Figure 1 (cartoon, rainbow, N blue to C red):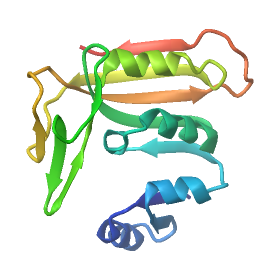
Figure 2 (cartoon, one colour; figure 1 turned 135 degrees about the vertical axis):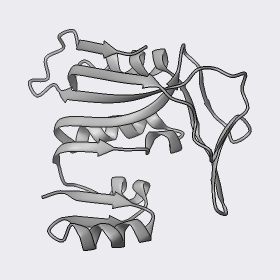
Figure 3 (cartoon, rainbow, N blue to C red; figure 1 turned 45 degrees about the vertical axis):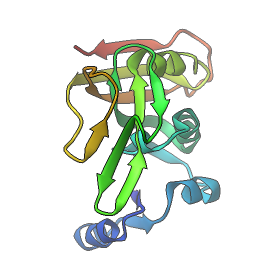
Figure 4 (cartoon, rainbow, N blue to C red; figure 1 turned 30 degrees about the horizontal axis):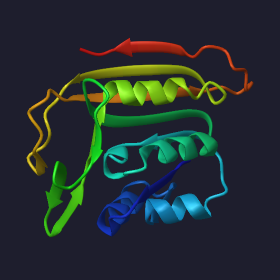
Amino acid sequence: NYTGLDHQSFLIRQAKIKYKYSKFLDKDLKNFISENKKKYDLVMMWSVIKSIQNWRDLILKSLTFANRYVIFDIRVTRGNLEKFDEKVLHAKYGNRKGAQLVLGYQSLKNFLLKQKKQIKKIEIAGYKSDWGKNVIYRLKKKETYLITVVIYKNINNSKKKINLYEQIP
């Protein structure tokens, strides 16, 4: 039993046909976050964070919705770079064009490691991966990596050091 959310009505209709016993919502993420009061054992975000300028708030909000785990993916570069600017990086799908997040791995990692009260353990695995064909990246070419992050919630609220596992190139 799970709840799925997407702003693309077509995808939601397809999911409702294929997975009849689950709940799928055709909603904007910001509206869902402001209205939702429910908690979930696991919160997953696939191909979401890249489109959100205030990615830190999204991760923090996801931690409040999750009882046990948060899992997400994000494409990162090396270092501390952070930009959300259509002139630097954007995706174009049909008539829609929107800025995408350029995020340095170190910036993401530093942010997560500061969340000691909410996070017990972090597992990060990634591989070298270029931007897709619908994405325009105008910065000096930097290698990009697609990473998956698994966050184990700190259920006891102890402020011990976060256990970190990394497997990245």
